[in-house]
Image 1 (cartoon, helix red, strand yellow):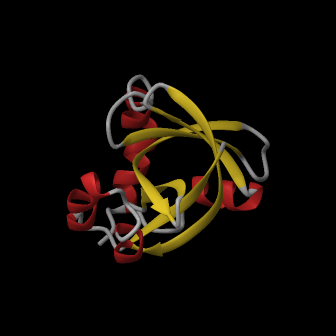
Image 2 (tube, helix red, strand yellow; image 1 turned 90 degrees about the horizontal axis):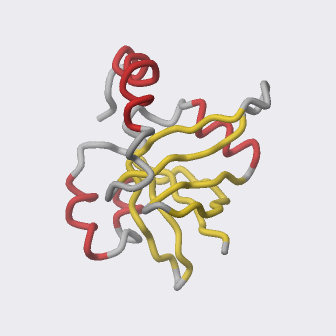
Length: 131
């Protein structure tokens, strides 16, 4: 399932500016800081984020609530990396990969896996954490 595009437009202009005030601190949220692939303009996008562990390497999974045709995903794919503000800290993330929800759920840390695997979205983006 993916949410309607009109809701994505509404969120971009109304909800996201409000969420940017707290999403970098709230559990299961983060603010993705990325640069426009054509404009070079900096963007801050609030997203649903879950910690992952892939073969001992930390990372994150971001739900694709509006599907894979998102500007933030195109931007980080073009750049190969971005910054993520989460739990009050900023970390570098790289290597974006679109995967199925089931594939991502297997890598989400056990504490959040039950919630993640039950959310009604089909795809997620996996990002590797760069320390």
